[in-house]
Each structure stands twice: as structure tokens, then as C-alpha cells.
Length: 453
Image (tube, helix red, strand yellow):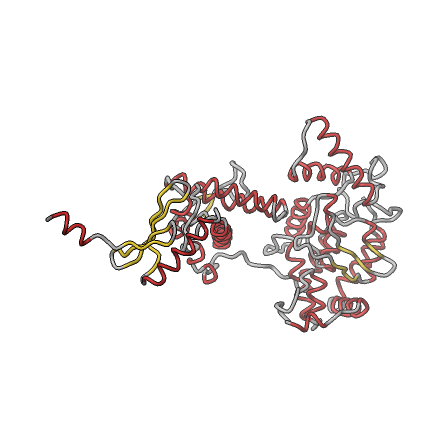
């Protein structure tokens, strides 16, 4: 009698090939075996939908394909490693980008270890965000640096990287099926930045004070940054052969064969005013190759490679890499090649980004401009000056290296159909820089007395 009652309450099973589906607790479930393991999942609210899912899974089993409900649970550490390897081997992201992703995901790894999280799909995005808010970190990663809380901008960047990490996990079937990206539901776009560092923008008077306070070696660096809007890294890797003083142009070019590329990868040409052409001519007098800006203690006459052009530096780098690989009996990765490339730039006399930053802080302190703390202010000021002069937005984007791509850009199809002539760009940029004539006059006077160190 008992067995009859149990039999009457047992769910009615229907089968589609190797997959069965049945009703349980007012929902429809499927059952099948994949790779010798049983799989039970709730899949639908109606019998028709359950039958459709069962047929799809049966077809995938028959073709030995991963089934609709299959996923491979992995730990946070394994998911992080696969994500970074994907950017390295498949997407070929820049070394700097991969390093930023590695640092950001290290926080997630630390959280998983402290909370003893199991598989990656069990991580709580909200709890991790709380963990970040209360964490003390060293801003530059050095163990002796004074620790502080993460800024809002840093927290948001880490969460955005984790969102990309879990988007990768979804595509690689490391999350349960029908599971949303946990970091995609945090509403990162609505996250406020309440402790953002204030951006200092020069005006004519503060620019004049700053350049007046810049000593001999520092002056051409900051004069060039102020009148071109270049990034410090672009200035540090600028070669003499990329400066056309006769026509008044400066060309910012990628140099992947020398271990350096533009931040956005967008090459561009920047018009030069006559005063800056004269200054750069004095700075590079007698030279046709090598870095434009060299270290103050560097002796060009004693350098064996300062005379090499871009192709010569590339051959030197290849020979150094070959020697290192021969001595170590193995092929080098991109990080090791980048380290060797830095030695080539060093031996050619090139300055470092950190030298530009320290120079900026030193001169700003001397000029008593307390709010100016980083050389990026020159780029902000340059772009603002172009706007003050009503320079066309497309010309501003081209000159700054933010040229829009495609119909989805800020100006839509207008940016696709508009082709800015070099003469127009040169005329408009020089016109804008004439709004601050005092600094141009200062560059002209300093150039007359300028003596390259």
C-alpha cells in the first residue's frame, strides 16, 4: 500500500534521446549524464520549454559538444591566470595594460584568500566592493610607502577590471548557465567620485611664471609640453628624425620595435610655432638622430649609440635580445624584451617619465604654484587653450591624439566625411597659441641665450 502511494506521487518522466525531463516543485527539470557525471537542472516553467531544452541538450550530447548547461568551475586564482594569459597570447594587449589588470585582480585574489572563497562563481561582488573600501594600500606598491585607503577612482577601476574578468568567465563557461555577471549588476556607471584629485589648468600668467622659473635643462622640456600638448612618455621617446623643423611639424609615432607605443596607439602630427621650432633647433643642433631630449649628465660625444637612427636602434635591440637568449638558452617574453629595450633608450641618453615629473614638481615649487602637481596639467591646459580659441573639435581631436573612429564617435558621420588638411590644422593651432603671446616671447628670448647642457 505504501509503495503504491509513493509511486503515485513520483514525477512523470519523459525522454528525448539521452535526456529526460520531469516536473518537480511546480517547475520542469532535466536529467542526463555528461562525461560520466549526473546533471540535474531546473530549466523551465512549462513542459513545452522543457522539451525544447532537452532536445537541444540531446543534440549537443550526440555531437560531443559542451552542453547548454555545462560549465567548468575554477578558482579565483585560475580564472585570473587564464584572463591574463588571454590578454597576453590572444589579444596581445600592451604590457602596461596587462600589468594594470594584474594589479587590479590581485585585490580579488587577496579577498578570495581572506574570505576562503571556493570557486570563482561564488564570489559576492558587493562584499568585495566593501572589502576594497576598507583596505589600506601602498599607492605605488612599495612596501615602505605610507599606506592609505583606495580612492573612489581606484575602486571603480578595480571593479571594472573584475567585470571584464567575469565577462571572460561567462564566455569561457566558467560560470553557471543563466548566471549574470555579478560585477555587471553593481551599477558602476552611477558610482560617484567624491575624492578626485583636482586638475590644475594653466592660464597665461601662471604659464609665464612657471617657464620663467624653469632652469636651463628643464626649460625646453616644459616649453615643448606647453606648446604641443604631448604626453610625457611621448616626449621622452621623441627622436630627432621625427621633428621637421623646416615645415614646422612634430610627428608622434609608435615604436613597437623599440618597446614603446603611444598610449592610445593613435599616431599624429602636431604643428609647431616658429618660436618652438627655433628652440628645438638649438636643442638638436648638429644632431640628426637619437632622442631629442637627453639626460643632463649624459655626454653625447662619448656615447657609442647616440648617433643611431631608429633603424640602428632597432638592430642594436635585436642583437642584445639575441645575446641574452643565447646566454639564457631560452626565448624571452615580452616583459623581458621590454626591459632590454629600456636599456637601449637609456644608453642612447633618453630621459625617463619620472624625471619629467620630478622636474615639473621642482619648478612648480620654485614658481610657488602649489596646485600644479603633475606634468599632465600641460596637456589639459593645451586642450583648454584650443577650446578658448574656438579651434574646430575635429582639429583638436586630431592634434591631441583622440581622433574619433567610425560613425559611433562624438561627431557621428561628420567625423567620417571630414578630412582635415594639414595646412588648416597648422594655421588653426598656431592661431590658438598666439592667444598667449607673452610665453612665446619668453621662449624666443630664452632660445637666444639657450645653451644645450
